[in-house]
Length: 258
Image (cartoon, rainbow, N blue to C red; front, side):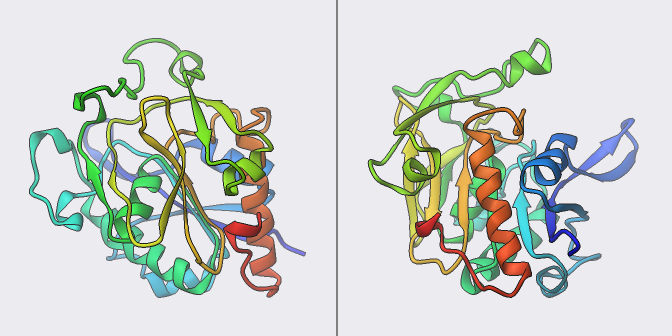
């Protein structure tokens, strides 16, 4: 049987400061292909080229990746400020309704970093524009200098709810993760369960309560060294299992039974 297809929701990027491209990090494709055991397919995330209906019909699951552009605050009822950074309104136009459609029908999704924030916003939640500016919060941003290994170094713990979805999936109440984000959840969306926190209280792991399918999302970047990392591997393996079940017509696999 052909591998099921995971649509990778990528980002708009200007190559060599003038050539517009749609991009997706190689490590995302690697994690999907080698750990989830699915076929990675990069989506040009722009409503001029694709529709939510087309994507739902042709892909079996979706990976909502990280990226420098942030969800526009208008999507959660707030005014744009300098702290909100750069935006990709075309990605907003595809990603947010796609998440809502997948949640409703049980089609598997996995959100990473911006994708984590997209899941929350799609369900009606809000975001802080800059976590490090909040009292008592640490700087969750990527180190500005150093090698990739240094940028993706494991830097803080994430504590899961006892007996929760992530606790059962990881087989541990606490794990060590990298951290490369500026924004974070302010108020959870409808049905969004915060199932893991950083030591400073920042939400790091979520799922959608009572969703019929796999709807997990994390604020860190599990695609880094996914084949070897003991936290990343079970996450992508469970996602791949849910995608295969969907592709075989076996129905949705709820996050609560992962």
